[in-house]
Length: 212
Image 1 (cartoon, rainbow, N blue to C red):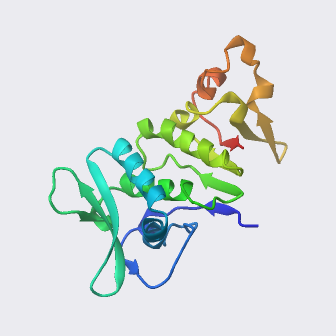
Image 2: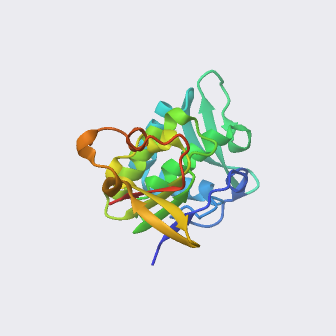
């Protein structure tokens, strides 16, 4: 129960939302991002401030994000960028900025899901951000749940430890799961090397990160 399968859609997350209501958890499509951000801002300010600090480190120029009510009873996210005096509403910021903020909101949930599944988080994000995103997923799992991530990104895989990697392959009409740590001896490479470099993959098949 209370599993979460993230199927995040940037178009669903953008734009003003009705301010009426109260949401604690991000929906699979992210269409309640503004309401969840407001809940964190109002009721878990320390968590919200951690999200803002992470945004500052990862998105150049971002100084603040704030859920702002409008005159017509709706709610928008206002992103403050350093060179500009006026904040930008979420409709006018980049896809990567919206997606990174949404993932940080998801992964800093004060009541994390026992099982979190995310498909291809690398889409719309700079490759340089993926290593830190892996660490966010790992920290989420350390709170007591499990995280499954499917990816085709070598950059994402470079941040993953070998013991966290499984890959799926079809054989005679059936899909089989393989654990990378059982496939390759870490004695040859050392446990600190990234999974992608150890496996020597030029093209990354569908890979699942498992952490707990």
